[in-house]
Image 1 (cartoon, rainbow, N blue to C red):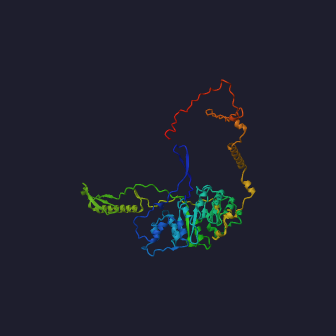
Image 2 (cartoon, helix red, strand yellow):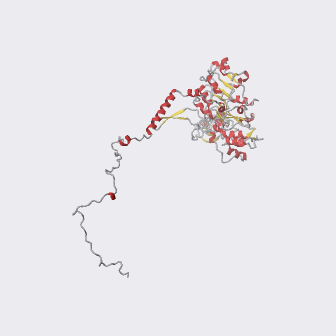
Image 3 (cartoon, rainbow, N blue to C red):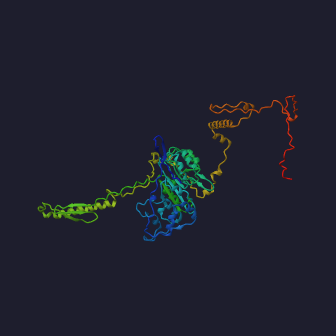
Length: 547
């Protein structure tokens, strides 16, 4: 499945520098892709460890194959006991633990199979362009598991009426915040059309319950007909838009004081947690089996190229004593030691009463230098040491831009656009008929209204061209003129063909030769008579010897 990309198109010149090719920015792989199973494990692997390492690349198939079966996660009784979660996620106990270093498919597989997981497993932070996010959206909601998605992109410049189509892959989208973006009422229409609902399956963001459109100046009352596509929607924040509260009555009403925590500035993760803890049957499973995918950034930061190892920090201190002929070399790792004696011509003129003072100063300087070196080595500060603060692994998370004074003051018009209705239970999904069964056939007038005059003229021209082409390719009827008068070719070098000649007709009728009388020749004209010789005395060779 292709990742969800909302980035800008980047212009690249062709080889001849004459054509600009606009390409969409590609998604960077997650840091978890660099994690590999070591050849030697520090623990004895168990059978569940082997099974999960082979199954986690296919969480969608695991969800179908496991059915209603659930296993109970066993927490270790002591620190020395084997822990399956720490064996699969070695960085679980790190102070700077980041979900970007854990494969999201492994997290989803653990949520599908096990009950009583640690509370930290409840929410997984993931960028929108993660290559495995579309795969996780295919995991169905069952009575034993509900995997919901939160998308927070307030002030995102990449989100527009065109790029909003990419959100059609978020089938489990529960809460959406696109405040202060360029999206308009037409974009909400396009977003609503991505919902495809049939009796067999549901595609698109049909599970949407919370929608925040604050400070979207291109949003008006035209979005109301398209909101009917989201049957589970019950929290709608339209403050700072051109909408009127009266246009949404009676479907939505102004929220009361008890529902105000469901709106901004409460983060969507806390709102979903409040819904999970509520007694209403909002999700398809019990509250303990609801897990959240939280996306509030676009993609991962590309990994930096491999760098050469930095030189080792110099950790040596050379001290020359002014009262003695010793040279002291010390470091923070080992105690001071004399390196040798150095003869000073004026050393015999020094007063011995000050030797203890100089030695004390040397010891204090060495101690201060050693402490500074140990501090630098601990925090990783200095030349050749990496920074102790971990570098960010994802792009900047989208926060809430400054609000206009009218919204900050909380005037009556802005509060009236905090719309709310009672949350529909999950059972409504099975009771509502698919939209395909509710649609009516369009009337004849609607068909005429859809086809414009310009399109009808184009169709007439097209039909005329087709008829003219058929007329040229159809064979012409045979006539006497076509037979007698051959067509002359335009090519002067082509061999001219002669017209077919009719067979010659006889001048007189044919008569049998036997019916013609024999002519009588005059005397002296006929052939002369021939003299025949007698053959009586001729010897008969054929009968000779047969007597």
